[in-house]
Length: 250
Image 1: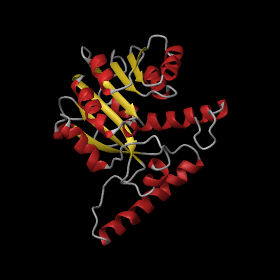
Image 2: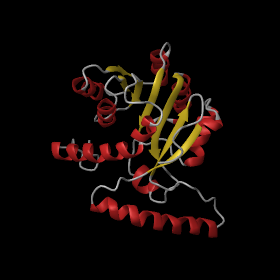
Image 3: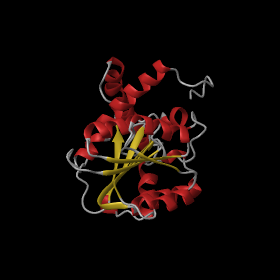
Image 4: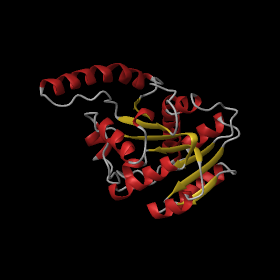
């Protein structure tokens, strides 16, 4: 849905979104998986809020033996996943109570939430996070991508611009959320989520944005405010259940 026009995306807009998001996830999320699991492994993956199924496509293309499960509040989203990936398991989850019941006897090697955690009300966010970490397999990883309030442009464009957002994050609050819900501090990484350099516009962005963010950090320092390391519009929360995280940075 395009909330500005009040109309569903047309096919051209959907195809554009698929292409753009796929390039983002291929650059930022896929390397985290490949550093921890080989393509030959039969990994069990749980994805929250799969949307158009873009990450599901990336997963199936790179892990032929994947066991994939999607959960969402919207049955239309789950039907789309089932129609695209016939072997996918789906489950409608409307609350943290539903999630606990669904996860009760399950373990996953990978749990992914892309553009999801910011939509969960704070009263339920702890439960979603705690249950996700609890139901990782022995060497499992948890990946969440969220808008980053440490970026000066995010509060207006990335958060206030979407009425369905409930919880803001920066690199500090993201780490706090993981720590308070059972993650070991040594097994947490908070990473930037970068633009891929595909197309002229993104190439220009990749040059200009770092310069603007250097200026932004300088202003914060001059004002005596906390200077954050990650100022990209989005950030990634990464947790490995046991052991050191293989991917230090992207």
